[in-house]
Image: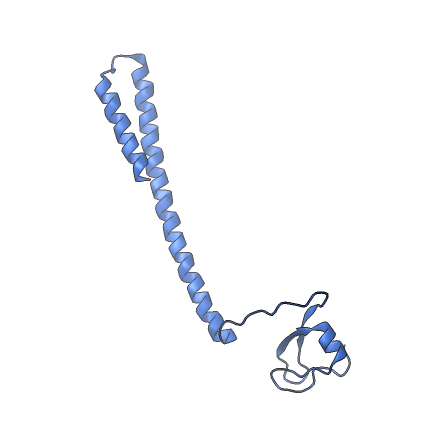
Length: 125
């Protein structure tokens, strides 16, 4: 927004150079230039705040990525569901850990738990 401040200074210089201080329009012109200067300053302050917030958000996202790596053991790609199949989240009845699987696979096959290796369900609940 530096260009707005430069434009405000330029307009102020033009107004002073016109030597119109005795005209009725001079007050209006000076008031408009002063308002323009104030807007430029306010926009500069808002830009600085937005930059600070953006930096803070970047730091927060980086911290969340670090936490996610610790909790989930690194980035894991989410597999895409085949057309017409539904992915469900269940809890292994043996090790009590969360398991994500396709409903049809669980229904048709005695699927093993990826954590403990035991069969998830003989019959679906």
